[in-house]
Length: 412
Ligand code: GAL
Image (tube, rainbow, N blue to C red):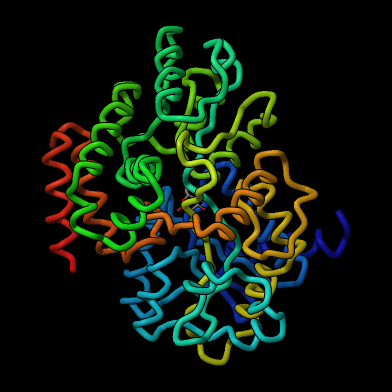
C-alpha cells in the first residue's frame, strides 16, 4: 500500500471513532453482508485516498426497509446524514419533501447527462435537477445455482418454467433443498417480480407498473400466485426470517441447489472464492430471457447548506468510470454509466451488462417492483403484504389476486 493511502486509511480509523467533521461524509446504508461490505470498502478507500473521512451508519436488513425507517427518524430529529443509499421512488419521495441537496454543479462538470441511461436519470433527477448519484444497476430476475448440484441432476440449465421445475424436482430427489430462500417480505417480492415477468413483459408492465386492476386480479395473476405456491414447496421449513445472504450460503455450500435473487447474491459467491461457470452458474429466471427487471442503488445527498465539499467529492467519486468498474466487479451489479468497459467483469457480469443493454434497446427493461423501481413505497408495501401472506399460506391463489386488487386500490 502506498504511504499516502496508508495515512488516509489511518485517518478514516480516527474519524470513525470521533464525530463527523466538515471533511467527512456520514453514509447511511444497508450493505452489511460480506459481499456488500467488500464493495463498500472500495468506495471508503477511494474517498480516504482523497483525504475524506467516512463515518459509517450501517443499518442491517436486505432491501433497505430498516435503513429507510432509521433515515426517517434521523431526518425527523433534524439530524440527516450527509449521504444515503437509496432506491428508486424513495428518492423522488424525499426530493418532494425539499430536504435534498442539488448535485447539478458536479453533474455538469462531469457530464453525467451523456453517460447515465434515461431509465436511471428518471430517479436521479427531480424537477430537472440532479439529486442522486447512481452507483450501479442490479437486476432481480436471476437464478444462482450450485454447479455440482445442477450437474448431479443430469439436466442442463433450465430455460423455461417447466424445465426449471424438472431441475428442482431432480434436486429434491437427490436429497438437496431445491430452493434456498429467506422468508422476508422483500425476498418473497423478489421471487414475485420474476414469476410475474415470466408470464410476459406485458403482464409485468400492466400489473406491476401500470397497476391495471384487470391484470392485478385476473387469471394470469392467479397463475402467478399458483407458481409462487409451487416455488414455496421447494423451500425448506426453516426459511422464515432467514437473511438473503444465508440463503446464498446454502447454495454455495451445496445444501441447496438454487436461489432466485438479484445479482448482489453474486457478491457472496465471489467472497467465498467461487468461480462463475465452475462452482456456480448464473441464469436468467427461466422464461424471462431478454428482459430485465432492474434496480439502481443511488447515493442521495441531503441538504447540508454550504458544506458541500465532501458531498461533492463523494458524488464525483461514485460516478468515476474506473471506480464504477472496481466497485461493481465486487458488488455483483453492473455500472450505472454506459461507457465503462466490461474488461474486468467475470462472465456473469459481462452477461449482466449485455442483457441490460439489449433489454434497454428492445424496450424490455422494467423497474423492479420488489426493489422500489416500479411503484412508490406505499404501493410496494401493499403488494408485499399480499405476496407474503400468500407465500405463508394465508390465502389461496384466487383470494391473493383479489386481495392484491384491494390492497393496491387502498393506496391510490
Ligand atoms: C437491494 C440493493 C442491493 C442489495 C440488496 C440486498 O435493494 O439494491 O444493493 O444490497 O438490496 O441488501
